[in-house]
Length: 414
Image 1 (cartoon, rainbow, N blue to C red):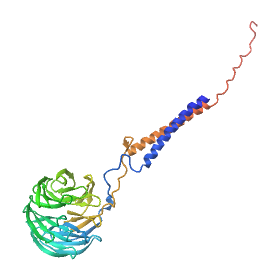
Image 2 (image 1 turned 60 degrees about the vertical axis):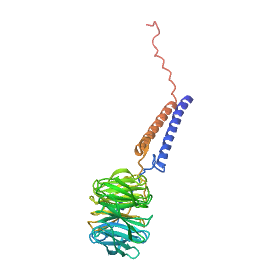
Image 3 (image 1 turned 90 degrees about the vertical axis):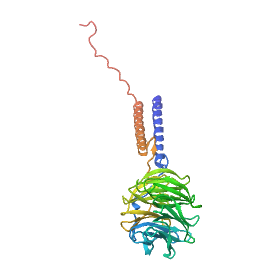
């Protein structure tokens, strides 16, 4: 009996240890503060928070910019030749119309003087608006033919304007509102320009040449005549969080990414929607917002990974411009077909997605299933060992002596 107990006890003890180890492993996995295998590097956006509101503006709104000193948004309305001003804290229009030149198509804010610079494509000039009064202070600064893109360089206080038909760039001194460089030769049909605050360079997209030209803002000289982009590069934006420049390619339906430190393409093509035109950078979450004109939606790219995190946010018809308001963290989209601006409210903070890592070489759910199977096996082994013990411990009944055979006649009787 004692030997039988030792054997059964070792089985029971070993099984109990296995069960305890498996159970403790299961508890550690379930209690882990983050999914095994590390966090998913792609942040998560709550899509139910899009969109938020619509702001009615002028006819065919194309571009917009924000005045960081007053929190107002300025929208260039191409067909009505005016600028609409709205208060970003309320998303209400405060000035329905400021008359500018013919066919305004670009706008930029000069943080040094608080002025807004509006490019007027058909009149070949730039109109200057004082953001403090919302009044025109300079009706016309003559530039090149069909000016479109405009950007402000904070390092020198200059305003850069791309002239579509004259294939050049004009430089305006924001302190005097005078032209200081009449022409910097760039490419054909230049649609947009962005300033890179990390290197002081200007990046101009050349729609007709499928490339980007780089100008040094310190010298106003071309430093890189051509960086290849996609088909029909339109708008350009600088991502201050990674030092990259993002270019929408209207003809090829994608975005080209340029490293501002090397002026080399790091990603030839991030596929987005149909006919991407406008593009904006959200400094709060590091995301890049691209409006897909042909699909009437907005695609969101994570600047940290250059991966799409939200393939489509539905907006109204004809999205063409995107801008981020740093005062409220909202993203604004101009829609030329509906004469509106759509307000997008990103998730308050990027949260990790539901856990989807690995355990024991399997997905988390698969790993948990395996643990459950092992626990069930351990329980069965325990029950079997207990049964064996009970059988060995049961007392053996004493043997009953065999009954003697019945008495018969003595031998030889008869």
